[in-house]
Length: 235
Image (cartoon, rainbow, N blue to C red; front, side):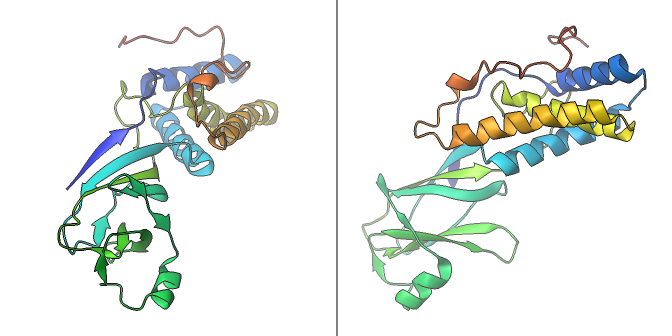
């Protein structure tokens, strides 16, 4: 059994807000109409691409280990393991093949000191411990992992991205819309803003403190259409 704790975020744009911004930008610059289905598809693609490229989203999970329990299935939104702790002590991450070569007996009981990731037959991932927790060694296992964002489907749903990075899917949606309409200048401007946000997210991710609060006001990375009033819970 595991519990999940997401890093606290900040109130941001909803799917409805994002669709409004993309549509307003397209209408303002082209007068053309784009369907809701197309915009939603592009926004989710932008959200997924941004998170995969920046690896910005991190969440924690806690497992209750048991004696002789060496395998713990990871959530379906797992991308990459950042850190793992056993009873508060960080485990050394090792390569699957390397540990099998160095330690042929993977069932050796003791206090876990190392961990590694393996794929499962169900096409998911599992965390393995070495040594295997011995009798009296059961304790909490905490992991920090990078995750894939959940697809946005409800209009009042927000992406799990702090501002200003919740604008990344919007810029991507604008880029796709203008590209479909063969507007090279507008599409180039939109993807340029998306790339700026991506570079800032990658730079931020490499900072030792991993602080997101310092990035809540990035100059020039706000709404693609300053004249648009973002709706607040309206239908």
